[in-house]
Amino acid sequence: MSNTGGVAADQLRAFVERIERLEEEKKALSDDIKDVYAEAKGNGYDVKVMRQVVQMRKQDSNVRQEMEALLDLYLHAMGMASGVW
Image 1 (spheres, rainbow, N blue to C red):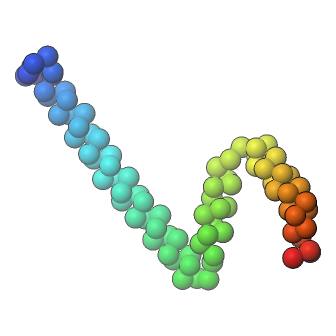
Image 2 (image 1 turned 45 degrees about the vertical axis):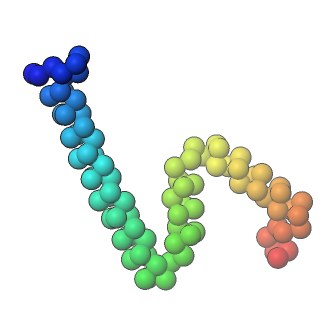
């Protein structure tokens, strides 16, 4: 292992290369996700709503229920509750 100015060059290079590989994998996954959304859109699905559903599924159910209750409360306060608009 070469050591340049207190830096283990081989170890540093290995870390940088691992990060680069992971960044490439992340880009590929991002492209795959984009393709799935495009396919869904091509089949008539609303991608904005799908993204919202995906985001909601990531949330803890209690947090999600609390947010939905607040949203409902606010919509009622604004006269925008279901059946009103």
